View 1: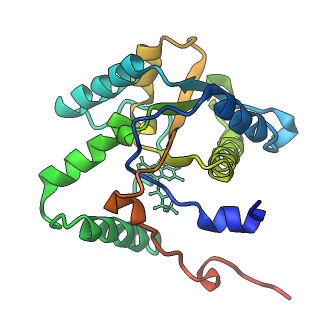
View 2 (view 1 turned 60 degrees about the vertical axis):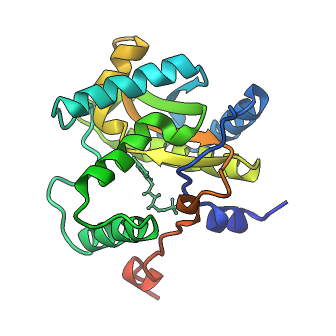
Length: 226
Ligand SMILES: Cc1cc2nc3c(=O)[nH]c(=O)nc-3n(C[C@H](O)[C@H](O)[C@H](O)COP(=O)(O)O)c2cc1C
């Protein structure tokens, strides 16, 4: 059994999956573990739709892609990415994107291929199981705290999955089309989509799955005051 530190450091996002859903009992194990995520006042503000229905996943993906093709940039409950990018975050974003495109031999100016690659998000990278995480709109009405809780829940899901041999990719791409997703799924009126996570069996032969973007040294992120 790997240690927690080994599990954290060996996880990475995967973007090509085998044609195999995650068995229900394994999904339940992942979700049981993630349910133990701490949250402010033990609110547990996450509501997860765990979907392995191929037709439904296609319907969601197609609805998003047709919005994109119609030139609609987003249809969202929360704005995930900064509106005004500043350094060092901007530089890190550019480096991370450039590294992926370089690995995949996609030219920096080849916008068409880049857009197609982004659309792969909405084909779930070939994965057959996707968790869509919502919260109650009331929780994010003039407050942001539950986003911290739901972010921790995201990491719990990915680490529990990884420990059980299930690969994943978190998706802010779906955050941007949260309203479309709530419509297709016909979820209760009070729910707002925060993000999704694709889960499945990594295609180990896929070049894209070898991508492991580096992290900044902790000196860039940490201030020790001894
Ligand atoms: C909240 C969140 C949203 C993300 N959204 C996407 C996404 O929509 N599509 C994607 O391919 N990767 C997405 N990622 C993955 C990041 O690009 C990735 O975590 C980062 O580059 C670090 O790489 P690693 O996860 O392989 O360690 C997201 C990650 C997080 C935490």
